[in-house]
Length: 172
Image 1 (cartoon, rainbow, N blue to C red):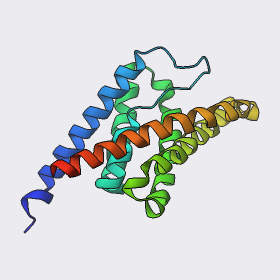
Image 2: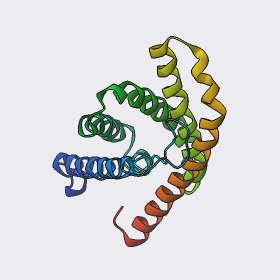
Image 3: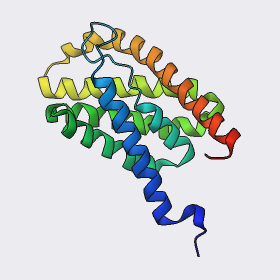
């Protein structure tokens, strides 16, 4: 018999709450002006939840949270055309984090997150190249890599701090 801590209802509730938090952060960030005048560059603060989930809940729950946030974010923002880009970036980021979580510990999220952010941007550029049928979009690559390293380091530090604080309080 499953313990109270790993019951299906508790797991589903945790995933739903994390999805709601990530979606709220995503929608709030969408209201902010872009940090730099380069298309597609943003902080990606909702990824704090994704990194947290990957390291504490595991790949299955993280995938559910990520896809729910991406789909609902497209629906709520009214930008269904961005769904492909978000899915491409999210899938690349997710796959990279599957590998990186075997290499980096919870205390090294500040290293894992920027690498995953770079993969996210590569996934989005691959989708853009496919949609636009040109590799010219790769001209953005140096700018996106720099932005991904900066934003990814920030989100990784935030997730690392969150996990440390929750473990300290015994509520992870």
